[in-house]
Image 1 (cartoon, rainbow, N blue to C red):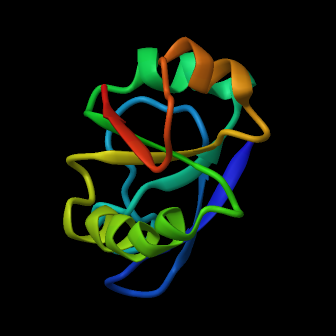
Image 2: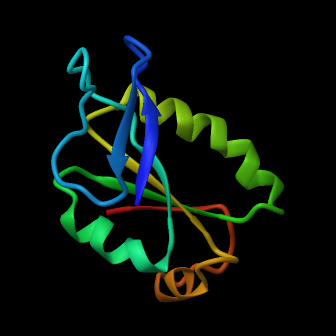
Length: 113
């Protein structure tokens, strides 16, 4: 699966795979790209195990008000820390096995890998 990410420096749209090693960079200006992606049960283990930089996992749900409240801060973090952290959003309604395995009892919950 790929995600389209706009470079904050030059605006170029870049396609990034959900699971990748290294630091994603803009194809045009070579600036580090913000990496904020939705992942599910199928991608979660590969994402966490293959990442060469820390992954901040946000466990959330569409109906959760506090989850929506922290979303802008996570988006800004992905821009401010581009190249040094990846942010993965896991919808607990769509991926209950991930939240169960991590022992999540309330959302929003963030886990750093």
